[in-house]
Image (tube, rainbow over all chains, first blue to last red; front, side):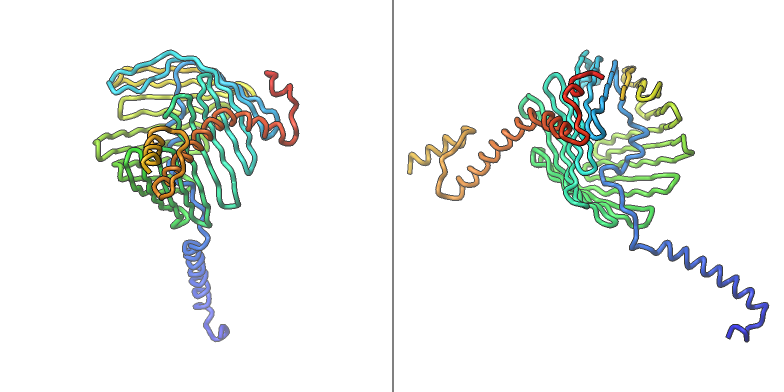
Amino acid sequence: MAGMVPPGTAVLGEASAAASAKNINEVGKKVDYMNLPCPIPYEELHREALMSLKPEFFEGMRFDFTKGLNQKFSLSHSVFMGPMELPSQSAETIKIPTAHYEFGANFIDPKLMLFGRVLTDGRLNARVKCDLTEDLTLKANAQLTNEPHMSHAMFNFDYKGKDYRTQLQLGNGALFGASYIQSVTPHLSLGGEVFWAGQHRKSGLGYAVRYETDKMVATGQVASTGMVALSYVQKVSEKVSLATDFMYNYMSRDVTASVGYDYILRQARLRGKIDSNGCAAAFLEERLNMGLNFILSAELDHKKKDYKFGFGLTVG
Amino acid sequence: MASRVSLKSKGKSSVGKVSKGMDDKSTTQCLKEWSNWALKKAKVITHYGFIPLVIIIGMNSEPKPQLYQLLAPV
């Protein structure tokens, strides 16, 4: 059959065959819905934006020393001196100078992770992550205090499927939550969550969408509690990322937008952001030596006239 | 019957043990009281025992660290 076709059309035929074969390959790649990647967990939806825009700002002096006893086990000693802000209803911020020492023990295994921190006033912060089977993970998180009725605990059961993840949450105070996230295309994942808080008699429903490529991540989340959160992170180069975040509460008509940058350099990591509430903040982590990090944190809130500066050292 | 009812009502106000009744109401009540007691004990045990548990698990993992490494600053 091929010999009967004239040579001129054969070349054209080959070219078009090659082009259509390429198209079929591309279409074939797009249509491979059976092999979608596993999406990230629902609570880490805004992970990139949070990492860039919300580092742990602090005020005062902080010193952290982590001592590893072996590969899996380490102890940490942490000292903090500075004003702590009390949550107050009025516009004024109330700060109380505090100093505390925190002792911590971590055990990190591929299957079991235990993380405990205890403060001088008796507060315990504990986290446990245990892989019960290949796909099922139990996570527990507790903040226990000596004061009655001020302790919180939360248990999560995560199940990881081929291209979906589900999570069941149980907390104290009759808190129940469930979430589900599914990969719809290689770049897009959609998820939803439902929660019920018995003590406050509140229940809510939420939806989330996440679109990511190598260069950017865009996420959106809507909840029936009135929260709408959108974020966009663009990886401009290996060292530079720019992020922006928009939060809107349609019940209380509260809007916050922020723009920030994240420079990951060889010896330092600098993150800065500016807010629509008139708050400009920056966070610098500089590696002075192997295992020795110097931290500077600054947060200027021009609207509330609250200026916070902190410095610290992290060893190990 | 009257004494049993009054015992039950005393049990409702106090957090301690309640005498087991024969009907459904007091078994669920009993269950709630016991589970409250168990949760309180679990909270105290976790509060005092979590960090020692992590340390014990860590000291028994391979390669076994020495005791002085636990206390020495370097």
